[in-house]
Length: 304
Image (cartoon, rainbow, N blue to C red; front, top):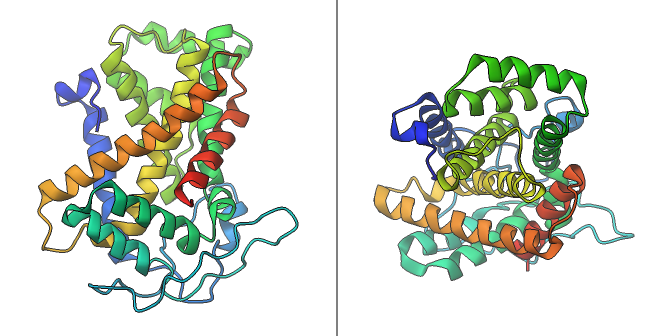
């Protein structure tokens, strides 16, 4: 994970991010989610929290050495005119976890790509269904970009007053990140919101690593686009941890193997997002549209 200056000082941002990362990695065995043929998305996903409670929904753990045929063709991808799949198939994540085990065992990015394809295709019902399930990611990243644009341009009196109070407090980089994330992304305790807050914090840390003197209330359009895109990227990586984390927990893999694999996954996903951002080129930021497009395009590549 990229570190902010405060992380090097043992700051609260680093501690919070590391703590949250540990939570995300541990959910796959502590909560199996709904059983086979239960809905892909719980009814309350449309509620204020917008989360999915972190359940993997396959009802079973992965078996070493194969998925016992549980990873058939991807379930429908929600193409125009076709309904999104309403329920999940049995052992929907087994094949993805088997492929992830191959990546952890030295198979590298090829095995991870296979894991990602199976996770999105069968495990999440295709890229359209996956983007729908993760819509809170796009909503939160878009809201963050909109807030940063309003802070820079002074177009919202409430945001202007908030920025003035924060500037007057002369906060450290760590505390400033935490205040921005807390202001934009609510904290009602859902897994999705905690994941998104962690993703946004990590993104700001990346920004401070490359530009230690940056003023986050006076960012360029490109910098705001990067904040949106990499928040989406980091939250996709969190989702991989959440759904395929059982593979990490097998005792045959050392912590070093797990971390090297996770670092490679983050590099790969961020690379995909960078490509999508570069396609857009410099332009005024449509924060919510950009977040939706980056999320959908990245998940579509995952499912190829």
